[in-house]
Image 1 (cartoon, one colour):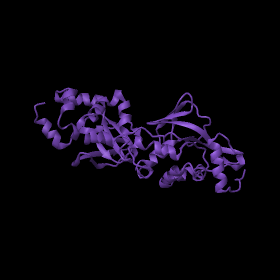
Image 2 (cartoon, helix red, strand yellow):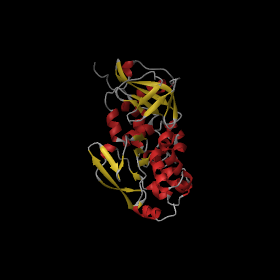
Image 3 (cartoon, helix red, strand yellow):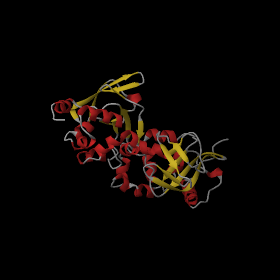
Image 4 (cartoon, helix red, strand yellow):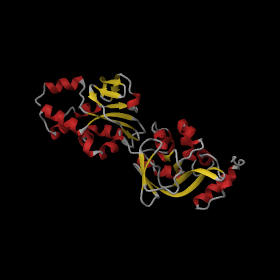
Length: 325
């Protein structure tokens, strides 16, 4: 099969309007790439700008596919501003986590799924998005409603599909939400993040953080239990500790560092200049200040590395060793 001859911008606009209305043009009139359809749509100018700003995503979508993608309209981006704490679309386009958000909209980079099927789908970003049983709702940190489809591909062999939504953009769950939903593993850490002294850190790990990326070396509940036992205190005393904020900040790095990208050496933390973590990479194994790092958990604005110890910056450790606890 050969590609169809180029079609005019006016024809693309007409095709898009008909698609929203549930009327589809003959397959011979279809554009041949995902980005080509988005670029030709007057309803998806923000999505087009976002993809242009994320070059790796644009390169992926310029291929033949097959792809299955949720395509939010300009109205959907506007509706998501409050959720993101953003003033306007320009603020969304400036977010460092924009590539993560866009990749999360690609429900599959290997198959065309149309109609959608109720299931958890692994996105191009790496996290899963859930398609509800009525197959019109797709959920991550936000839930979007699919209102129409646009077929994409060579005439007579459309390999990809855009599932159009107008009510919001599909956001992956941020670090705080990922941790808070893993109650069996991170409930003590989440309780610490919920403390008033850590309100700024909690915000930084959520959606309304301007898109900042973070890496969290997250002590598990078992790690906190061992720490509390060693200090002879309970969780209530821990949450009232005037050094709690410093302890938690010592576990958080700016930027997203996957286990595969960890390099042996010192890493700056939110604690400050005197609170550096010692990271060691030995093959696939990673340790942080000697604590064993378990399998990482992806988030939309970073990554969580479970660890088996509570880490202490030296200044806090000295203070604790001489305290009444």
